[in-house]
Image (cartoon, rainbow, N blue to C red; front, top):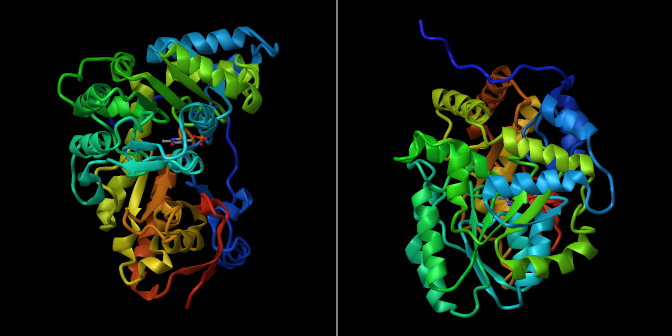
Length: 458
Ligand SMILES: *Cc1c(COP(=O)(O)O)cnc(C)c1O
């Protein structure tokens, strides 16, 4: 018989997990104001809050850490990192930063002015935060396909080119760049096709607008291009990545995702003037330009992580685990953003808890219920994250309301996936008994979801 699929690695070091009782979890969640960001990790059994910085490093990454050069300037670790980033992305000028949002902060401090308009395929929350805090406007130009969670299309993260062109014509001279996010995290870790990447760059360049690729999950995006887009079946992931970036002007990167390290980021660009501009902000915010808030050992681990996670087997192991969980949810009839994304399953909370009004945050309610059920910590990517309109201060209810089950890289086994699916099924089966949602008691003026305090209704 044909051998079944299995992971492309084995486990060398383990970390114990902690179980708890429902009674304990009721108490802990109350103390956390019904916001799972405020739970202690000890209070969590399986942690699906994020895949950011939560991956397991390889033996090669750990040994690279031992060779870290901690010189203040010009460390060998920096050059190892710089060479790898240049080789993988084909971009010329590289600035390390301590994480992805720090890369955004440095680049946007140089580029974004009050009143600017910045189109993008569903800006990530920190990206939008960095735009709006500078009194500029982020306009979503994602394809409409992404709004229908049950529509099965291969590249749901794509840009709607007509929408993008409308923004570009209506705001001539006022668009400093466009943000193209691969994979599109906000709409469910959905990939962008090579065809769409090229067409987006060509359209922006026609209007003299540069393209910044928000690259946190660039390698997962390349995997989907290889497995779903005609003409790429026989290309390596590294070849596909080079082609994805061939027309891009710059990239911001959170290395906590596809470089599989606990901390790190960078800016990469082919524009010399942007590099010079960014240096001026990197030094006061992040530190000297050959370390940018990182240790030498971190830079070494990033270089190694980028190299190994742009290999097909590593990506296949990861994405097949996400698809394994998706198949379980199919079996139980639980609706999620289809097809499964690269790093997570996004359960359609609005559909599961359709009796709970938007004003009572169904996604946030479902997040609480899943934690209470089994100690599984997921995260709301919905009306809470969407925040308020900066001008009207009204809640933004026009997007999707999702519960994100985010899978850390190389951390959990498929037995854990079975537990997650069973816990969610139990909540799903008693969904009609959940009559009320939650209410905001206190919120921050920007990026409220991290610190919001809630009250359970009913
Ligand atoms: C995580 C992420 C960021 C921000 O990166 P951090 O390292 O968390 O600061 C930006 N964009 C996308 C698409 C992300 O997923």
